[in-house]
Image 1 (cartoon, rainbow, N blue to C red):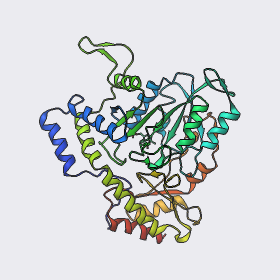
Image 2 (image 1 turned 30 degrees about the vertical axis):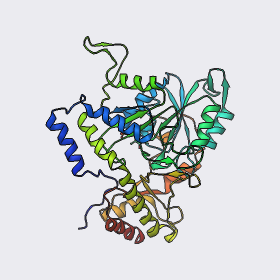
Image 3 (image 1 turned 45 degrees about the vertical axis):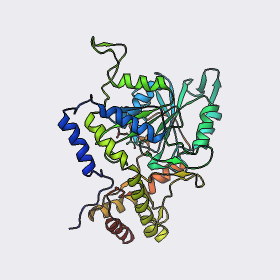
Length: 389
Ligand SMILES: *Cc1c(COP(=O)(O)O)cnc(C)c1O
C-alpha cells in the first residue's frame, strides 16, 4: 500500500521542538510569558506594520477585528461568497450584522466589478455612509479575502472602499507573505492595506502554531482595543474590573514559540510551495484539458505565497467528486473548493450578486496536495495519478 499523501499538513522540525521545549521547561506554558509579545513584534515587523495582536485562532482574530472596527448590530457587510465560512460568520452573525455576498474574479477573490455595480446600483451614498436600498441598512464594511494566497485586486478595492465610505477589512489568513513587489503598492503585504487585517496559524496554513491568529492595523486605538477584548476586557488587573464584554482569545506562550520558529522558516516554505507549484504546472497544465490555476500577479507586481494549488477540470469532461474519490483510493487527499456561503444553511435570505465565476470554480476545482514537506517524488506520484484518471 502506498503512503498517504495529505492535502496540507504542518511542517515542524527541530527548531519548533527546541523553541517549544524552552517554554515548557521555563514553566511559561499558558497565556502569560514574553514570547507572545515577541511573536507579535516579529509578525508586525515581517509585514511592515506598527502592531500585531495575537489571538487563539484566525476566526477569533476576525471577530476581534470586527469589534475593533466597530461593526454594529443591524449593519451590513459586503463579503465574498467563495471562501471559508470563518471569513464571514465573525463579521456578521457574531456581530448581529448581515452579509451581502459577492462572487469572485479569476483570482478567486472578491470581484471588484461586482462590488462596484452593487454599490452604484443598489445603494445610496449618504453623509454618514452607504445604505442598502433594499433593506435600508447601513453598510459598514467591505471584506476582502486573499483566497489561496492570491492577492485580491487591491488598487480597485481600496478605491471602491474610499469612494463608498466603507471600512476595508482584509482576511489574509491564507496569504501571509503575499505582497506587491512593484507598482503604487510596492512593498505592501496582504492584510496591511485596508483598515484592519487578520492572519491565521491553523494547522493547514503556510505557517502554524497548531491554532492561532493575529490582527494588524494602522489604527493604534483599534489594535489596543483588540488586545483588550482578547483578554477579557480587564480594565483593572488587580481588582478584576471589566469595562465591557471581553473574550478569552489569547494565544499561549507555547504557541508563540512555535510561531517564532515557523516565521523564521516562512521564506523557505514559500520557496518550496513555489517549486511544487511549478512541478504541478509542468506535469499537468495543458494535459487533457487540465489547467493549473495561476496565482494572481497583477502584471508581475505581486509575489504570492503560493499557499494552495487548484486544478481546474472544466475542459476535461472529468467529474470533480469522482476524481477526488479515485485519488482517495490511491491514498492521495484532495478536496473541492468550498461550498458557496450564500448557499449555506445559515444565510438563506441574504442578497448575492455576480456569482457566475464562483459557481463555475465551485463546480470544477480540485485542490491538490501542497504541504511544504511534500517531496518532489510524492508530488510526482500525485501528477501520475491525475494523468491516469
Ligand atoms: C483558515 C481561515 C480562517 C480561519 O482561521 P482559523 O485559524 O482556522 O480560525 C478564516 N478565513 C479563511 C479564508 C481561512 O482560510
